[in-house]
Image (tube, rainbow, N blue to C red):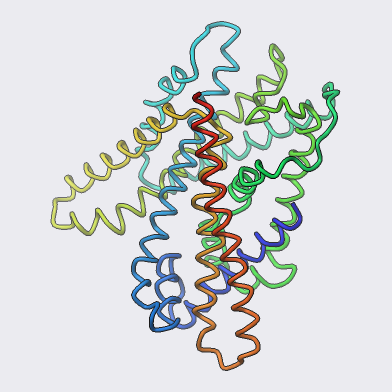
Length: 375
């Protein structure tokens, strides 16, 4: 875990510093991630310049796929937890519960403005915090499993572990947004700055909950710790309800990102000659289509843990490892200090290879696990 933390922190720092340098180069206050990819590759070797536009589009694709994948994970999570809550009363399949929440999800996804979603996000954060406190209480006070602990796992499961860790710890969009909106962006990535302190807190929190959860149920752990809480217990049910509502609200925030990218960069410019009413209807139709797409995918493959590993390995290995390495190497290409360049190039090649291996092996293992789960 410590090695993953160091590498995750390094790639975040790499992304933010490179973004800052591209903004400085273009003399603009802000560049999006795809724009920064385009600018940085344009600074690289001449034989790479043709990759700048496809590279920017590839970043958009990976971000869209990842965010829609998160929405799929949320739908499966909500369905699993609703089934846990209602199994004592009715015996419905998880797909039925997903269908029950489809219309409310579509209605929530019709909110077009982040300012309107912000108060809901605050409520969701409070609910999630209360739920985590309740969960920690059960993990500390409940009866632990008597099974011996496996401290290392197995090598074949490592790609799935890699995908899960990357999914949990890599949030390129959030990192870039925070750093670029700070009054002093340099304070984000300096030693003991915002990035370091934030990563330490997050990693310690994840480690604590993960270790407690593993000690509680060992090999019998479900894909989500809420599914392992005791049944017919008021406080446990409250924790599950609060966290489920929190995830439900968060769906709209995550679906906003692919809607914004697709509409702002692709559909919007193509339909700009249409009337305002038609444009608004097209945007709402896009929101409904994306919501239905995530629902169909979640119902087709209701495998929470494998979904997390798949989208973590497939998208975030590229966004958090491969692209930042390419961007930094291209930005450093014109530097006169050859010794510094050699060190940076060697580091970037290593990070790129790690990301590429994680992407291929993690994606393959997750897809294989999904296929085997239906046999």
